[in-house]
Image 1: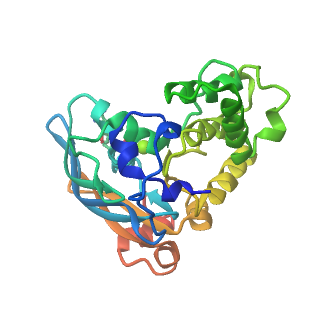
Image 2: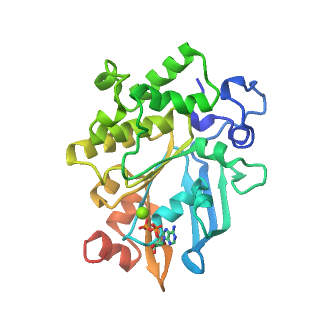
Length: 288
Ligand SMILES: Nc1ncnc2c1ncn2[C@@H]1O[C@H](COP(=O)(O)OP(=O)(O)O)[C@@H](O)[C@H]1O
Ligand SMILES: [Mg+2]
């Protein structure tokens, strides 16, 4: 079976057709996991007349976990929301620079933002399941994708819940409200809701910071298990967590009043031998 990283992305980005209806094509792009999944070139963002990010360059490796760290207000959420064009929904936002997803410019006129967001899913700090049953939380996005066959719906719901380690906990309560789940279970359901759309990439904005330590651990374990199957970009204030799960770390800071990427590299190097003094002070707990 083709993994999410090998899916034919350009078609997903440009055509609003259910994946099952797409004919297999010889030209299907098979993506080597070593290629950058996302390539960001000279990204700058402002809200109104206030510049909040500038000069960001980053190659995000397919199948890796990239952690974004840095103090509040340095533009981590803004950066994340540029990667699937959620930023387009923010009034007064202006973005310049280039972001490519597996070689496709996400600002290309042919790219349908809704398609892009299915391939590049996003999960937020506060679990936000729909006020519906556990089952409907997953069936609804599938319905929007055009999946209506009952057997296929059940197969995908089952796979998504198994994938986030929730199946055993909820299989007898699928018709109960998702809001009755614990915070950690709700967050794993939100990750399942993104995964059910078979994305290549997941953007996670402080996914554990509203959770108790046990739930946070379960979500962290889940994120670690996504490595290799999905490209994961995760914002975290928990440096120990970044150290445990990240392959690469991106350190943001406010420089001259504007957010900037001040250091980026393999997690091991960033934590053992940071090159920027601010990174060093931040990870030692002296700043930020
Ligand atoms: N919708 C918005 N409108 C105006 N300013 C915003 C908006 N969202 C964030 N900002 C500002 O942009 C800067 C970066 O914010 P954000 O990306 O949320 O940083 P972080 O996630 O690192 O805390 C902050 O100064 C914040 O106040
Ligand atoms: Mg944020």
